[in-house]
Image (cartoon, rainbow over all chains, first blue to last red; front, side, top):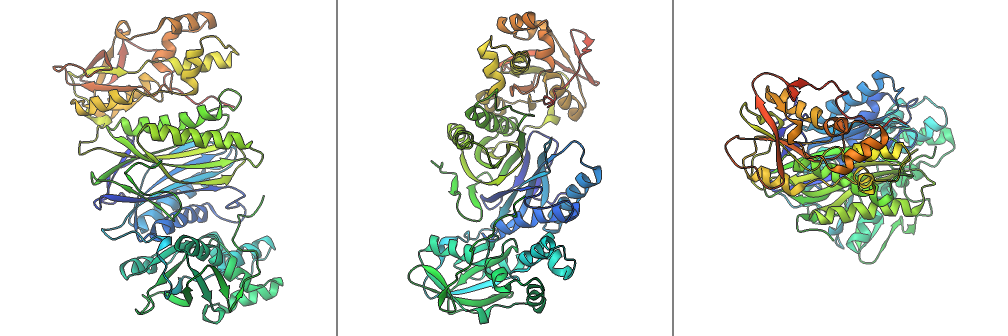
Length: 294
Length: 294
């Protein structure tokens, strides 16, 4: 089912998508088998849903709503048909949940499963939310739970099947889109998708805005199961929360004098200068997230 | 250098591209090493230019001008830096020649070189040119020379370095964009990019328009070097001309009572019914083009 924004869908040389705003937000990501997903860890549906979520989060972080996806699939010749169908069906279903169409793409033979997604988004007449808009005095806030994808990955790498919710968070991120759109409508100054890890992604805002940030761990919501999972693996749950990637929550800065929109939690402040301190000290950890190596 | 249509380029969660028309034409293709190009046959620059050309041809076939490209590159970890740089530089340069920006994309590790391109295009207020618009009585016409990419591929497969222009035509297609835009401005009824081969792509127009076509080989321009190359390889140059893919010329149908725009050659007529005849008979050959097998 194509939404009203799809003027011409698949089947011609190109698709045609409505862009009533006169501008189109656009982003692209490529997911590669054994680097961004593993067929023994994730179902084809999980993989398709993840591909849509991480792209949709990128345009949502600009304040835009997805209108259309283009999906190019590279598949080995011996790919079981249910893998190809499962990925495609999940992409179509996820796009439809977002009110967007899958309007084009390509299907080619490749040595491994490669999923390349482009998303178009509509700003609805509003200004795009940049990473460069943070100002001293702003409140730093996050939407979505942090560290759950990293915890799920650590559990999968350790062969654990405990904490199914954390495993699911790694397999299929669920970006809190409504919070991002509420922020865009509610005066947010700067916003980004948390894909590389909280500190790394806040670092992008700091660099592009020319500011520093002070965060307080006591303000960060950490679920008990994250603490339990870390204990079981001898890991530090703060490493997951502060540097784990792929949760696809959102981080933003808001003017200090207005209430935060629904879904957002204050975790710190923006100040003059540069760099990010956590509880008054520079975080000594590894920083941003990397795809798992093969 | 970003053109004026690039409102926000790379470096944020998403790019923002002007779509003054209120609609955006969009298409995506994926090129895979050893299937769509070979690193021993083509330079990194050739590969980058080909990736842009085949995508730009898709939006041009709708009558649109490219405004922006997104390029996701999958590269093996041992890819020489000059390969990655050459592909990227050629993509940037080709986009700029078209007046378009490279506004985003992704860079990931993969088992082979994979290039995934999405192109956005601007219709400039005109109606999109569909494959479904052909009508009985229309003139069938082509823009661009046919069969040259297939000839170049046959020469490369045979280890020949004769006919450098044909080898170049395979390595880097040069779509006659101006002819496509002139057609869109000049009352064309149906148009498509010739990517699968003339008969296959005209077949798409026939199917989607519910018409048939009669073509005359004596009206098709065939260069002497194509005939010479075919003779040297014991091949049939008409097979290349009628079924060779990847030339990325354009095929179209025009109303019978108006002069063809510059760059177009009449090769037949549209009639009631279905199917395509060549000199009064159904072409017995293989039909559409397939990527070379590995």
